[in-house]
Length: 226
Image 1 (cartoon, one colour):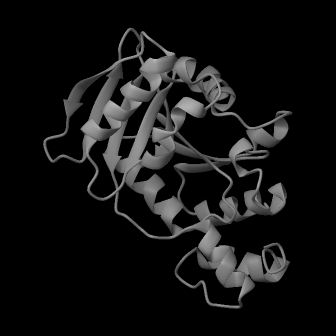
Image 2 (spheres, rainbow, N blue to C red):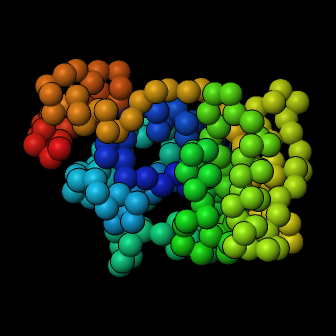
Image 3 (cartoon, helix red, strand yellow):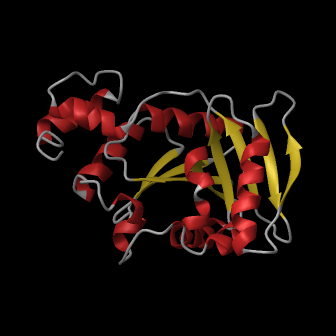
């Protein structure tokens, strides 16, 4: 079974998250995508998060009806900060090596700052959602440039490209892990902008599922948290 892991604060989950997960699932041939709700994300220390229970409930509402999407609360069940390498180890133990961490290009370019970055890249597969005008060589050069300073034996090679240009696969030298770059439809939506609109009393219709919008208003989330 080929499994994708999409982690995030989902503060709140929106159409951009769902579209990215769906397109990647189809283009990368994933059997399941797990939406892993971050409990204590180290990179969100300066952001006021809605309670985990609210964020998890919104994810469950958003993915209802798509049987290949699943919500995971594993990071709440585990003590301490939510680190990608720990989450990936958990899913690898469940499903084997054919597990892919889904992330955006901007986040991937900062992977050198993640916990145990070298081990992560050598033992875990990635799927990178590319942005408009994306150049695979740019990501390859950046990763090798940044990471080779810290990890002398970490280099990347191009393993293959889809005929239609929708995907490209990079291999990590000396390891079995791969980085697949997948082009997805760009949607300029962010959780921050949605929270700001809610705080101002502005409409958020069509930016997130109706069930999530209704839940936010019923529970009074975000209106006084920003």
